Image (cartoon, rainbow, N blue to C red; front, side):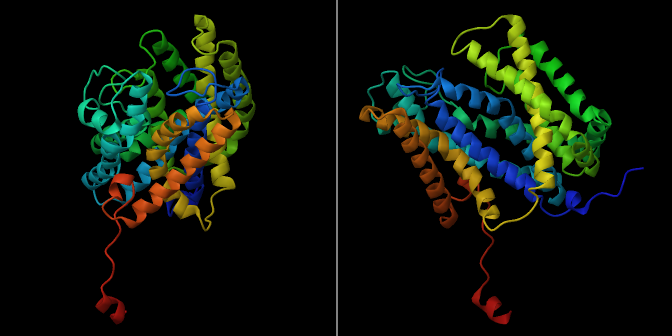
Length: 394
């Protein structure tokens, strides 16, 4: 028999998951800003890079996106529970994800893709690029349309959510939860997911390319869908929360050791250097093990110490999606604009990060007060204001 569930796991808002989501998106913005100043390939690079930043980024890379998919799965379960029907849920989630995705493709990504084209030698101005080249699938300069850039996360999330909705319609939400609970009984919650995910990733890494793309990123899909499903089950499973609380400590040394392995591979084979098959496989397995271990550690921390409200929690939780949508183009365009100034790397990083934060805050505040912009910035539609007669009657 199952123990009585803690009330906080089945009702109300889990503030700890809100704080995890806020922190994960904040780290993502910092991560992308730092990539400008780290050796290796990225959209745009500063002339002076710092190899010392490779290790901190290596410790972040394995778990930051799996964490976001797990938190998204948790939110999906809670939203599905509150929806009147699966049809209403699917329609609401599609509106919340596809409108920002379309707005990003049509508006927000244009300056970033223009900078890419300029770096490749395109002589066109931004308006002429948008009118004549941006829509081409195979332009002379830069990337073809659609180039999802960082919005691939939103694209993946919408597809996963719709497929999950079909699964729930066919089998019921309890079907997913029961199987995850059965596979993670006792201490198996620590090692069974690692074994299964590592086996899946290693079996795919030499067969299909590891590259973003809805129809090419099969290794990524295996990982991200698994974390999403676990978060979905966690949304109504006090049993999983109890197992996390009982076994998260085992993940601490595991995460530390695997993080060291990942960092060593990144340092030993920088840039385009290719490790042997054995080292590459060990590095991928270490990434998987670290991502799962860190997930358990962070979920326990969120449940044990972070599950409390604060004055700015609701505002920050609402603002992370608009900030996510705009941060990537701002980083790229700002870096390109200040490169001719010849600033040292420390000053360049300060300018890029400060400008990005200011743009994120400004875009969110603008979307809050412009009703037509709200859904395109990932914000919910405001409820209608009460009439004067209703206020007077109250």
